[in-house]
Amino acid sequence: MKDLNYLVYLLEGVAAVSALFYYKKKPADKSAGFFAYFLLATYIVETIAWIPTIIYRWEELHFLRDGFWYQNFWIHNPFLIITFLVYGYYFNTQLINNKAKQIVKFTLIIYFLACLINLLFSGVFLESFSVLSYVGGSLMLLAIIFYYYLEILQSHKILNLQKELGFYISGVAFIYYLSCTPLFIYFQYFNNLSPGFVELNTWILISMNIFMYTSYSFVFLRLAKKSSHNKLKNAL
Image 1 (cartoon, rainbow, N blue to C red):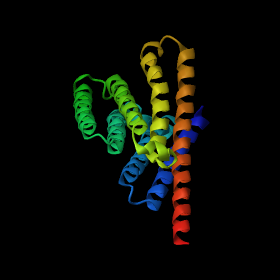
Image 2: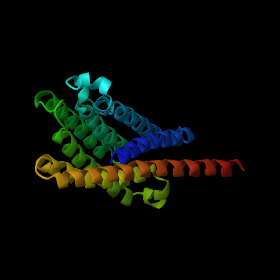
Image 3: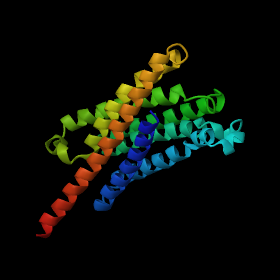
Image 4: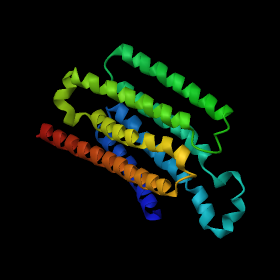
């Protein structure tokens, strides 16, 4: 299990580097650059989140066990909100309908305010993952992606899906959050009642993270290669 956690951490870094490599090949795609820097920020946050593990394994640091650094909810909860805001903003840049874009912007603002109030006044900030942030963000994101698919079906984009970065990112994100959100909800009720469920939940989450970051890496590298190939053909 520990080795798989290291693997997920490694794949997060690979996905960030792959995305930045793609952006270097296509600097005009600002939304791709935005998402690439988000993946880099994710990797940095996950690096910081290893601090409790380091404290636990290094006997010299055990004096920090009763301190602020021996948990990472303080960084995961705010970044969880940022994650859904980034996904929402990214897919909003992919939408065509201006009215839909305005609705998404308004929804993102409401989501941010609701999650911020929840973190400040519910006491969850330093104690556990925010259910409101995760479940609310997941439902919001899935709805935005669903509408994005409807627009694809009604536009010329459907003719060039193999070139649409947003389509690949949406597919990965849709599968990931559609799979993980029910687990997150059930975990709140069964984490103290069923060790078997906790173990299954951990395995599935690790598997889905491996799937997500491997997929992102593959997509960015594949599209970057296509971009280089097209530039070479045009030069000839």
